[in-house]
Image (cartoon, rainbow, N blue to C red; front, top):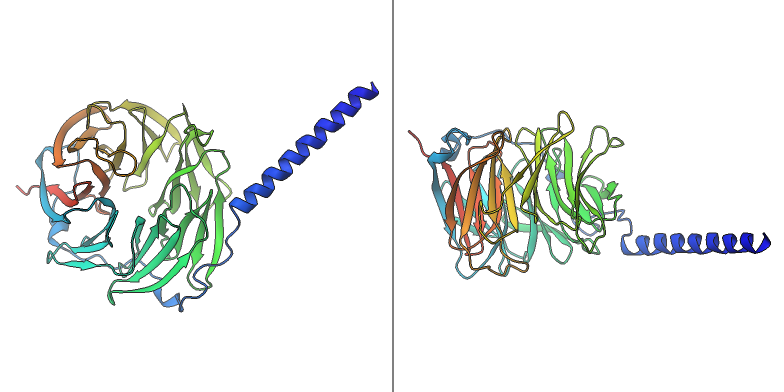
Length: 388
């Protein structure tokens, strides 16, 4: 009996030691980040609110839907030869598109004049965000540096080394104009007035954060975890709400060893979609909290590719799938295809050859009138519905 107690005591000590070491290594690898932009000028004046909507020719096109998608045409194209588009964003007033490249500084494309503005002092961008008033750009690069760029003055105003990188470095603006960013397995909000960070949440599972989207309609963050072999976790979708931060929702997609390529939120905020390397798309109804039936998409945008990007229209009834290149922006020798799906009927409507090479970024604008796609071939295209 005494020997058994001794063995149990030793096991308890060993377990406690392992847990303590795990916590130590976690805190060392993913320390809290109390402040942001310490050595930068006053950022209070850059804290913004949504700007008034203006009417542009691009906003006069009809809202894209299942009923009219077959009338989709290319409205505008921007080309940067010998460069790969890595990510892009569009302003809330549909007047300009911001594009980053793998080996060049980002560019601002004016949709009305067709002019181009290079973004100086910024490179290797992984994520782009545009402030609610369309006057400030935030860039998060692969090395873990966040840069703020003043659009009217065309100048870099602040730069901050976060300290360590995530597997996915994501930056967003909140509805109040503060900065939301990921670091390690945590998500923070940088308050421009105080330059203090508020940790919004930690990823409580073992899986790595894969993607984060700020849903302004419902004032929440939608995120995904990878579920791949390296992270040892499961593929999940999570919702964290600013208005009720203690009531985080998590949806287990019942997928192991599966990589979630991308997530999308419908523009009305009511539907979430995630596309995975198992050639399937999962949907979540944010109103009911229900996981909706899966759609198998194999061969819809590519006969061989299982790396995808995804976008949803205003009400989530139309899904767009683009075929991505291989890891490291290596081409798979395919054209860039866009596949359009009727989500409610779970059926493919049409597939078009959109670019000479694979799709690297795919979004809807905030009105649901435009689709913007970027490609490995260096082109950015703006799509809309042909007027009658």
